[in-house]
Image (cartoon, rainbow, N blue to C red):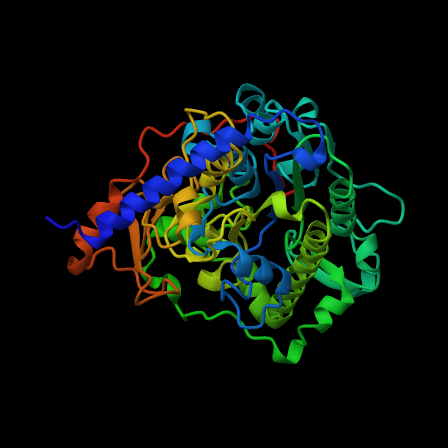
Length: 496
């Protein structure tokens, strides 16, 4: 009996994976210290802060200017349906660096403390370091710029050079617009070279230019577009205020959202305030921005910050492409989570909707001829096991992600598991290639069909026609989640 085309294709992919694994093993047999003879791939690991899908290649906003992220997407594999495991800086970065879910670690928000976890688990950078890589990094890789000194050969977090514009500074105070809390924006005249991210990129560029006797793992944490949106004026000029388009919103969008969802939307402290889940009075930030007619200015400032962040990445990408390591360096680009700019009356991260969980994820492997878009739902949790396979490192059994190697060989390869995002031990989102299901652990729920409702405006959780879909996704809601791990981070205003 003739085999079906799908079965033949599956066999071919399996053989390719087997051959690739064998080749990786053979390559790792080399122990030469000569840089020209090194065969293990290098890794450039780039993470942005609060970068949502407002890139040209992600089509999140029609006026985004991101030529450098877009050119990486054009030559690698863009995972256009990638989602963060958690929706704040600390837990998202913790999950990527440990390969573990918040429900396993107890790190859900910025006030939960992961320091003991970093010491007890084999972090991604430590795994590379202990397997013969030169491991160095700069900028914000982990929350609060934390880094374990023994886990890196070199690392610089906060640049304190004289004359550098700090990540939360604007030297031209008269240009600052300040909203309640930490939301602020404004241009300044200092050049990119004197900015925090500019200095971070310069530091990593210098490491790329060195003669390396070992394969390298270089991490670059670009802080923007994290608030405050302070960037050089030329990036504001790229987005003239009079032409700025607001994100698409629906009046009374929260009417069909359950109370727990409304509490999330009304949060203005990223759950650093215990009263967040009891706020039923509305989002004062959203109302203030509308009342003061600042919505267009805020969107302009975010767009400017995205363009600035892209430009810094472009300088880094140019440095690698012009180096002798261009043909043997894997690039992984990702963001810790997205950001809402008025959708569902929310102006921050820390929600379980598309604008926050969906993030750019691009993987470029110069040895891989495949490129294009993978629309399967994937998770940032998948980065760690993917790099282990691409670089031929020893496997780690407790990792909870799933390697993306099959999708790197063929972006159309199907996945069976959805992407899971967690906000608290009880609040979870399940996202597959078409639907998003949100459970609040108390019977309240949301369901959205992205085929007909890409903006998540219509909650169909109680529509009889979608009960089978809901039950299918419900199976993936985490159970027996670990309680939050509190410690020295458990203070207010931890949005660093």
